[in-house]
Amino acid sequence: MKALIVAPSWIGDAVLAQPLLMRLRERDPGLELHALAPAWVAPVLERMPEISRVIGSPFAHGELALSRRWALARKLAREGYARAYILPNSFKSALVPFFAEIPERIGFTGEARAGIVNRRHTLDKKRLPRMVERFAALAETPGTLPPASPPLSPHLLSTPQQQENTLAALGLARPARLAALCPGAEYGPAKRWPARHFAALAHELSARGYAVLLLGSASDAAIGAEIAGEGDALNFCGATSLAQAIDLLALADLVVCNDSGLMHIAAALGRKLVALYGSSSPGFTPPLSENAVVLSLGLPCSPCFERTCPLVHLDCLEKLPVQYVLERSLQ
Image (cartoon, rainbow, N blue to C red; front, top):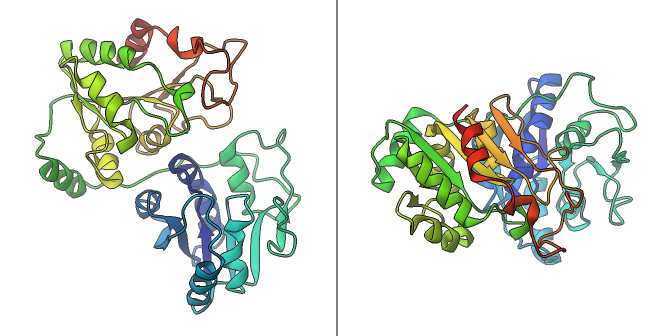
């Protein structure tokens, strides 16, 4: 039997969806899982052993594109999927499984999806406070909760050969000690520890014998250049593919990240991780790893979940001291 996973459009959310896949395969070891995912998320799903095939979703954020969704759905209809698990809560995300006439279309109630999603779960935020629990609940019968034991932690694959290929492609030698700093966060500046703090941390780590790499997307390139300008880190923000970033993170002895997709990837690779939280909540989307340390000042104004600081000062991250982050990184 085959099932289609309509994947989230955010990298971190895609990582947090893996325990759902683990639960589905645990309950039905013969189940073949395919994922429908945008190109910028696909490399994460390709590193999940539970996924047999990743199908590219060609739609931009917010794009309806009814005729193209219909055309894609008619191709997918030939796959004979018995079920679709629709992880995003939008109306648009449910259209392809509906047009493909997949018999069971499973997801949370939301955005006028009655009839389009025909096995609907009602979200109880108090009983399911974490995103990973909400995704995992879709494996159960509506109205019931996942098993009492915590969801399995995500686990992404990065083989030694993939790592060597990435180093060769980027012209890098394997360092004796590697620290990866991830200064970006796609959601907005209220989730970003200041660049000057990252630069100071890179200086301290370099002085202790670490090679320091800055990783992130093209939108983080300017921040990376500002940090690298201090001379203690190499800026690879926007210079790697996501698959290459996964392999570099897998090689790292230490990763320091804002709450971001790369933070969740580092956690899923089991790396020693220091995660910095400002406007977002470690109670909702924590890194799911025993090797992760979460640092948050817990100010009365946070988490605000805003893209930019509504009070302008950004104290939740500005006042998170470099020395404290360094100490926790070296413990």
